[in-house]
Image 1 (cartoon, one colour):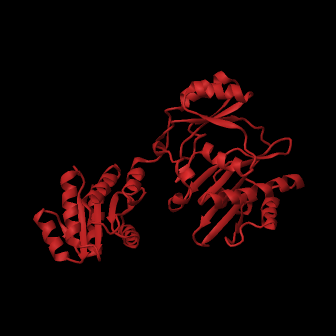
Image 2 (image 1 turned 90 degrees about the vertical axis):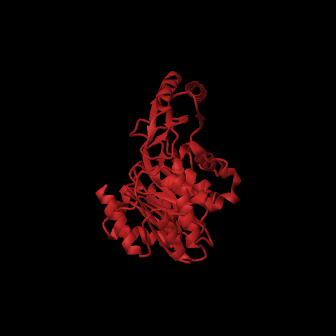
Length: 378
């Protein structure tokens, strides 16, 4: 789960990280009132779970409260990467001397938290890693001991030359680690972490993602979820307990089991196609779950064919076949569907599909080849 910048800043501020004052507004009048209260130049920032806000016009400087109101009226309702802006953060504008990057994430290869720091802040950290890797320092943190003081100093020393700023940076690194652990986060980052002309180190932007499996421990963070800022397909999948990730291809995949889903996507790519999604419906043959899966897949305009790949272990293939037929009767599907069912009661399942006029396969290679061919023909 992602939370908004203003929400992430609340957590940083509680942890003792210097963050400029600011408040969220949902109307131009609210933004004007906040700007008057803050005084001086403010920044009006669109609150959406997407990067590239500045390039899209979603971040604007306002020298007066009236300007803040005018900028807010233009930003609210703006669409950024498919998401409509519903609120803005109005925050004090800081004078910037330098910009750095500081973040913690879960590195799945290392199977441990990873601290990353770069003196080249204000741009995507992926671009820094790709074009100037020497400007990126990484530190694997042992979760048994956490970030130790000398490690925090080592990180800050990479960012700054001034002893006082190194001290401030080390303190912020230690506090950021605390936020990461206390929130059950999968990622927390400050970009940029700035220095002011007077030498202060401050966080003027923040991002935080929380593993959904941690939310039962952190109900106060779960309450921060903004469903209006999430893609509708992802929200629908979460409510139905489906594992779904949208991709950029044309072959919509509906599979039971994460391992089989990954293998299916690999095989689609092997035969020259591109998967449109990862979608694991689990072991259930509940028609409602299949209906939801098809609603999610068909909502993607890029999908040219739907590929069912079901292995019946504990799940009976004939139950799955009945669920697929019922789902197809309840949804108007305008793209071809190819189905592979194998395992428990597969003969009965194939007969059910045959009577309904649906082509079915037992070979994984055959069904994937057919799906890729249909997607290419479309």
